[in-house]
Amino acid sequence: MISFEKLPAAALRVLCGAALAVSLCAAPAFAEPSPSDSGGTSEPAAPAPSYEGSRYTATVYGGNQGTVNGEDSVTLGPVALGETVDFSELTVEVPAGSKYYAKGVRLAGLDNVRSDKNRNGQTTAGEMTVMAATVQTDGRLAGTATITEDTDFVVAYGILANRVAYTVTYTDADGNELAPARTFFGDNGDVPATAPVYIEGYLPDASLLTKTLVEDESQNVFPFVYTRLAPEFQTEENPETGDVTVTTPGGATTAPVYNTTPATAPTTPAATTAPAGAGTAEGAAAEGAAVETTPLTTDDGTEVVADDGTPLNAPQEESLDDDETALASGAEQPGNEAAADSNAWVPWAVAAAVLAAVIAFILVRASRKSKEEEAEQPAE
Image (tube, rainbow, N blue to C red):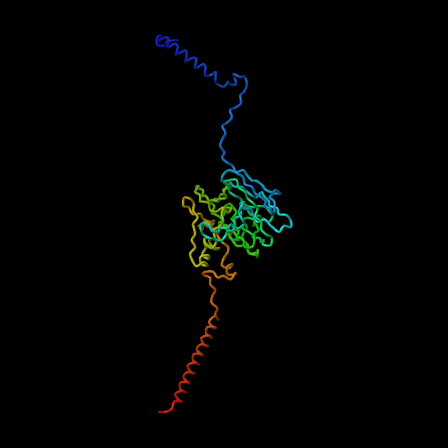
């Protein structure tokens, strides 16, 4: 065994230099051969796999009364978390002669009317289940849904005997059609929640319209009235969420002004939604109180104005079930009591006269009897 302690310094330096040279020569020997060494070309190294995140699907089932695109079910997607699926390429077919018709598409596992009884310890009335998509007259679906997990939808059906049509229109203040009107079906008594469509450069007067459907289909109209924006303002729709915003040339943007698809159930009209005409002087006068409105501004405080320079208010949910509908059913609304009948005093006057006559007759009779009794008494 070599004792390094007995070696002279010069010999140690030689040994260290030799070891270093061997180590430098060994490194290339373990490296990948170059194309010139092998005499051919080498395949490029495969890129490292990238993380794309989970993707989800939406399955639409035809249910027991019909089919979707001729199948029992159709799967849409996959899409990333938070993206939307579009139902417009799907058509619902109901067999000829069926007593049912397709009303729309809702989440599987829900009834057409969602029960809210005993919710949060309180008993409340049930609410209509909002459809993720509605069915047009040709059977084609209209609507989108935001997906956060694998989701099942099912076609909701109604009975033909209860079916009524309702129409949604999209016009400007002068009545000019900005987009084709669309007709849908629902049951008599349903309360559809209809959202406006996106029209570039315009804003609707309401972000959501609700109305109770009635048998007279001419009354089942949901009119969205749009206002053209000033040229310096631009509108933009997010294709994934349906949110519509307004921007200025400087880049200032509003919060989402409205959504082209109702994502949640509308609030109870009687409690929180503004009546038709809200935001105008006429609407305030009809309600007998000031209507609170929210000016529409961008994130830097710039007011959004119409083409004529008029500042705009943010669209709100509105109910089209006005006082006339309630009065037609015989119920009076607060602040709209019927005027008293001009002849309502007559019965009271007659009753008072009769009572006065009876009292007078009794007094006269008592007076006469008293005089007769006095006359019959013997003189002292």
